[in-house]
Image 1 (cartoon, rainbow, N blue to C red):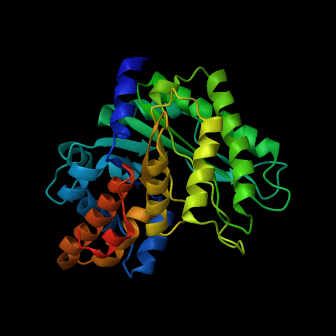
Image 2: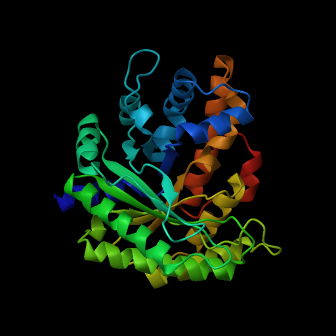
Length: 341
C-alpha cells in the first residue's frame, strides 16, 4: 500500500467546492427510477442517461470530483465508442466503483440485513483498478425499528465494512466507507443520533482492528435526521448542529473528508443541511456530498429518455451540482434555487 497516493486521491475527492456523483444504482433501482419517468430500462437507455451526465461539462468539470459507477457502467462505451470511464477522466473527475453485492437477511436477526460481496473481492478490485477505478464504495444498511438495530447487526456490518476497506487499500484503491442508518420509520432525530453514534464508533473500532489507514479513506455517513414518518421533523439548524456534534464525537481527524449520502431527503433539504454544517465551520475534515437521487432526480425528469431533452437534462444536473458545490463551501442560499443554472 502506498499511503501517500491514497491520501492524495482521498483529498482530491473531498476538495472544497466539489463532491461525488453516486451513479451506481443497481439494475433494479434504476428501473424503478426510469419507470417513474416512463422510460424503459435497457442497457442502451442506462448508457445514454449516464453518458448525458458524464458529458455535462459545467457540472463535471466545476463541481464533481468523482463518480461512483455500477459494474455494468464501468465496462460500457459511449455512443461514439469512448469508454464511459474515459469521459469521467477527461472531465477531471476520478472514477470509482460500487463493489458490494447488496444485502441479504442476517441470520437470527429478524428484519435486519448484512451486506455481501467480500468473496473474491480482491480479484475484482484488481480488475477495476486496471480499468481505471481509483476508489470504491461499500454500503452497510442499518434500520431503526421496534427492537432494532441489534448489536449483532451493527457489529457484523461494521466488521464487513472494515474488511472491505482493508482489501481496497491493499489494491491501491481508496475505500468509501458507508454505514447508512436509514431514515425510514417514525423515530425522532435523537434516536437517529443515538443509533448513528453506536454505528460510527463500532465502524471505526473495526477499521482499527483491520489496520485500515484512516488517511486513505472517505466516510460516507447519514446525517442526524428524524425518520420520514416522524410526527416532528427537525429543522435545518438542528440537523446541522446535531450532525456536527455527532461527527466530532465519532470521527477521527485523520480522515480526510466526509461525503454525506442524501438518504431520501429532498434535493433542497440535502443541500441546505450540508450548507448549514459548513457554515458552522471549524471542523477537522472537509464536508461535502456523495449524492445519488438528490443530484439526479431533476435531470432524470428533464431528460425523460428523449435525445431532444439532453441539453435540458444537463442543465438540471449542472444546477443541482452547482447548488451542492456552493453548500460544500457554506455559500449556498435558498434564493439561488429559483435561478437558472
